[in-house]
Length: 313
Length: 248
Ligand SMILES: Nc1ncnc2c1ncn2[C@@H]1O[C@H](COP(=O)(O)OP(=O)(O)O)[C@@H](O)[C@H]1O
Ligand SMILES: [Mg+2]
Image 1 (cartoon, each protein chain N blue to C red):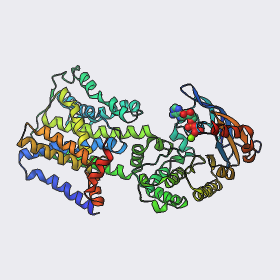
Image 2: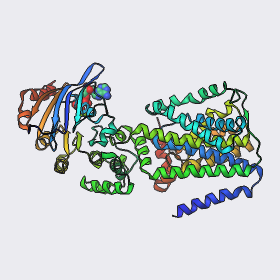
Image 3: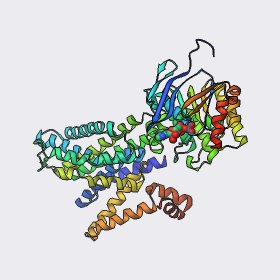
Image 4: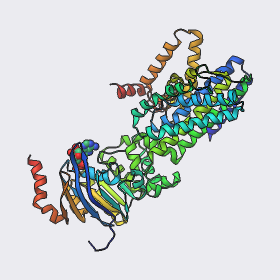
């Protein structure tokens, strides 16, 4: 109950923030909200079932291009574009998910690695998507609007994860992560559960791509299907706490802030320092911020020693 | 065996090879409703593989499996769970970072008939089973913090929570002391009395003798004996399979 009130207050605060901030702050805000959504979407499959997807940047690209094609080429409204992008991404999730989600663990991750590059190659050769030059969307100068849309999407994805964490469906996903053989013989249709999780993940990822496309107005295959974006989703979700409701959101807010602060003060070394933050985080809190909070309350500073001992080679 | 009675499970010519080695070779048997069938044999005889074939964890290369009156050898493991087949794993498979209660709740949420849809009701069923298996004091601990005997009990509780009609038990008494073995024997008898048919793999002879209505013996993947416990355990080939192994 207290938690619910605090969460509602946090959302109200975030929603009101752009009316007090300057233009640059709002732009940082849009980026941070979209990144948090991407981390949360990745969390649905990656955090709950333990299947690390590197195909989410492909869903992002499909959302981007679905929106861009609808608006720039077919002159349809934004929401039709978002729907088209989401439809393409969810369809892609089913088509690739059914065969490759039968692969276990690492094999799945490897099988998804090529998806972005493949789709980028296809898109680069289609007239309707502007080949390798890209597309320009109609210009709208309404950053507060984009900010509120991004916030609404983050809230929607987080409410979905909240439902998953409490539902029978989510229990099935967690059982798959903990032991897939046991999950199967206990009556869980594991392939079906994983595919549905991937579809949900693809849906939110694609909408985030669509909002981003309309906001920056210019897209091309290389930036829309960018595998390094997928790597950032993984890092943010893992940093915050995979398989938790708020971990990926808080984690990505913190990392976005750290990255922006570093980039502003010492632009050349920012990437290096950011990398070091990640390395230290993996060593000292391999299960993310959420587990860190738990551990500190239970065993104090010994938590770090335990992790080092547990995970050294 | 009463003539005309519909078996709970019938296996016909089940065969499974691994790289040319026959782990289970042309094995046939029936299991009557309400029966406890003991499955024994030296290490590597193919007992676990046979259970894997029945639960669907592995597919058979050849042979038929009839559960109640339907063929099941092509069904997926989750489909076999839904029609009432539950099992434990010899190499135990707890959900390590879930609490004991949550572990068992998963069985109730899925399992027979697709399981209980309501998570609170499922948790209540799980709680009752933890009491039944003597795990209620460990309820809130994570499964990876349990000791060996409690892990065995957890395997049993998880399978029971699925409300199976046929329960396949793979060495649930291994590593238990005398007192604990007697407790589990009592529990298994109670499960049978509640109407569950049971196939039990066990090395503890005292337990298998007191539990089983009939026993089948596997050796090098083949069924070498079948019958009443006293008869089978006195059979020269069975004695040789065990002792020959030990002397070698
Ligand atoms: N997944 C597997 N892959 C390869 N060989 C296996 C596999 N499972 C079992 N075997 C082999 O099959 C034979 C029977 O094993 P198993 O069924 O575990 O015997 P038991 O349970 O009677 O000790 C053994 O030789 C074992 O090495
Ligand atoms: Mg075995």
